[in-house]
Image (tube, rainbow, N blue to C red; front, side, top):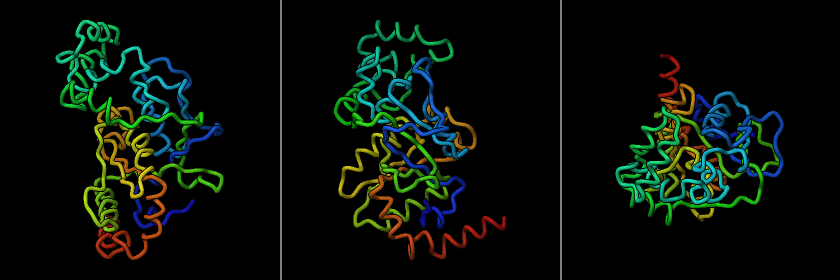
Length: 276
């Protein structure tokens, strides 16, 4: 599939798409089992960089946050840690844990190299109470009826694919252009979401949530350092994801011509960058 937005943006990485399906694609990469503590962003990073499809199903995902992120239910409640201990991990760790004895046992079960992060917390939320409230009342949880979630290059999409979202991978300059383009189509402000979430959730369940709206937002991702850390350079340090539901992407495509994307300012900047 071709894209006017991508052609005008000329980003270093072409977009990828998210698809829910019951058919497992051939030659796709993905976790083989739910053992260990692997991050799905390792595979999604390869889809972005190497243009190889990645596929996920609930039974082979080892991270309960990714179960939430890819729409396979409330992984926090289903885990042996439980939602309360996850709230400790995602905030300030042992210091403010509701059940310090139980959380301490969870820390001791971690591999030595991972204990410090569990003890001190990942700090996505500033307090245990805020994390628990957010996870109980604000995080969107989904139960996919389809078995698989697939990420694949936009250029490989065909008429049989039911695309849920398009995910741009952009550097700071390209992100500036995309956001300026998005805001030029709005009558209000505040249309870019920055949820306190894992990197996979910013391209998964929050996109599902926005897709239900009449006027959906784009979601800025890779503001999660743990997710970044699972990816290879230059994605690890220099890029963001910007995920848009299919409905919003079609709006982008319809308005790409005579927009910020093909205006003189961006054209001049691109030419200057090529010359330098």
